[in-house]
Image (tube, rainbow, N blue to C red; front, side):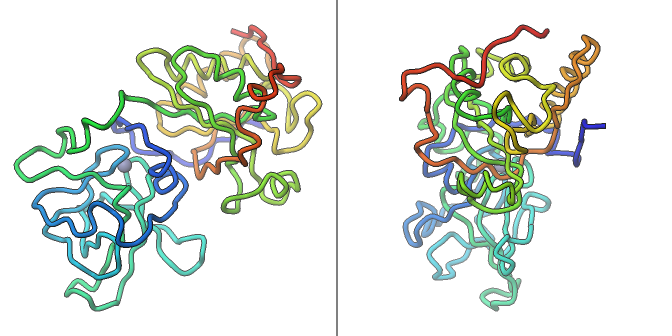
Length: 309
Ligand SMILES: [Zn+2]
């Protein structure tokens, strides 16, 4: 059986995911770190609740904020259940992320004796928004005015990312498509490393779309029609596991849609090998891989539309 399901995925709570600018993406999605002493919440002292920049989940109370002198907002406690801890790939630190959307927050340090709770959540300001006391955390945070309309994100792997990016980028309602690597073991892989087959990454695309114009299901259907989901670890002339067919779902609903479409294709006789896997780190590819066909002014050799549904 080639249809692989892994893990239970993210929370089933409905999330309104805010669009992120490039600096926020670098921190929240790609686990970057803002420069110390530069964040807007470093010396911020108002009473209220710090919420996830991406999904709005309440994370920290101002009463738990303290000045650690480290250059980033510091908290010695979190709102119960709001923050997920995981071992940082550096093998030393403990990463913290939003328990609801998985957005990267920073790191947590224990045993520094800075406060009686002996804990320091060291959080990027870019990962946070602030809701002043007296307003519901469910209300729009302070920065709502700067935020453009609601978007959602889908991650697909279907062979050479140049072609998938090109085809999905033509779909109405798609705001942006970015080529990158995901589903592998190492951080920030290069194209050469991915092609070496040692990292396990797939060439993939991250699609930001407006759900009022195009649904995740419509995008997933299109994904199955612009690549051949019956080819195992290859796509046309491109052979290798980095060209595998895989849907990286970000919510339980995305997973259900992917599984349902695969089942539908199978009833139509397609021996679908597409894997359905929880989304993990997405590493944007080198600039020369972005908008490849647009820049070359040519059409994909690797992808074309075929009606399958
Ligand atoms: Zn979040």
